[in-house]
Image (cartoon, rainbow, N blue to C red; front, side, top):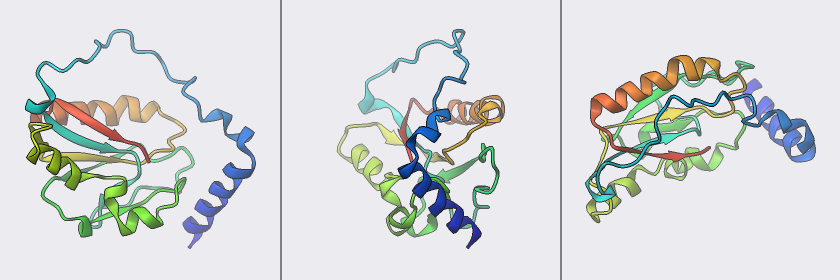
Length: 167
């Protein structure tokens, strides 16, 4: 109940005091000039594609994201492609999760990704996908810990591209 109240308050506050959210910019991010630009090495219809959602999507059996952490929860959850929509839930403080909980494909379009593969638009869906919790105010841990782990997972799985679905 406490988290629901905090969530409602933060959404109400953001709607009425938009100037207070100027700190939600990317100005604090460091530019990573040593990283290469990413280009597909093959056509999209031959690529293995993963989903990455920042809407706080995770399996119902997973530990929920820590929405009470003032800095935000930088951790991620692995979501296999062979799960059903009924096995997913959403934990997020800065978005209204009511509709996403009743239809997770709003923020995690796995059936649509599978259909894109069936239609020949992508090669195949990845066997693993990633759920993140957006609204991370202190991105240092995400940059140092979480993102490198996700990149390593994707490289080990032979994932060619990721579709980012913001929350």
